[in-house]
Length: 441
Ligand code: PHE
Image (cartoon, rainbow, N blue to C red; front, side, top):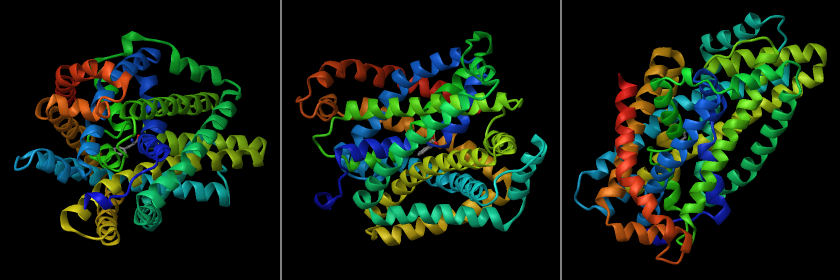
């Protein structure tokens, strides 16, 4: 029943959306991509995409969610009854489920590394030794599975508590903490000897490195980072109050997300270069290079190395949990509505299913890569395309405008609506298609 639907508080929804956006993508993917594809040159393209393409796409999904006040499948069904749009919604939620599963495996690794930092720290004499810790951990069967189960279980517990008592409250505590942690880590990282090379790597614009592939990656990364196309933004927005300003909420989420990504770059790269390492993508950067840096620090000052390692893995863990719960909620809320299940039952079902798929990802790296590939290159892109085409071409302009401007009450939003609508209709869908095919080829 729509009337009894739980609602976020005003700050709660901004922090929950930011929590969903800020995640592993910001910490390990963004810094690496910046370095790989031309430093400031990549950042400029990324920012342009973020504001011109991701923001309208994010707004579209958010507008659909709040207008319908329902989760993904039912939202599309209620706004376009009897059409096939709802099946695209289902596809998006399926994508969210796949990410939930493998994301939880990585979340488990960060939990494992946090525990290691607390218990004994990292004590390796060389980078290979430090990297071997990660390899041994992932190669062992039980340890990563246990960590995955714990991470997923904890996230599900927050979901069982519900929107207000679970997600809202958790985000309000964790997001401010995340910002304090990441800024502290940055100050520290920048003070390391040799950190300037890392800054150069991040910031020197090199347009020759900005290949078409780099441009495609910029948009894909921006979508992933803003949690677009998975029904996550839609679901969270369905818990948004009618008087909330959708435009400023979305812009704030985007700014928080970009800020966090850039600061993560200033944490990771200076530290990597200071230790004489080369940056590498993905898990190996965060779980192999970084522990070595803390181990070296620990050799000079054990306490410092320990504190830094704990701070770093705690940051990753919290960022990962706030993203994970948003994906779980996208799935759970659909099951609750569609099948009239209680929250507990729906969460249990998602827990068991994601536990199984996650275990498979954890045991087989090709399954892991496949899940990552299809969810971010296929499901996410199709989901984003579906939501933007639905809002831009299927919904009535006046209905969309009424939702965007809170029935004409918001002056700034009314003035900006035309620009948003133009981008939504004519720029965003073709851009998604181009990137979709570039990524597939
Ligand atoms: N935005 C999250 C990150 O940057 C990942 C995510 C994708 C979360 C899709 C929800 C939905 O890590």
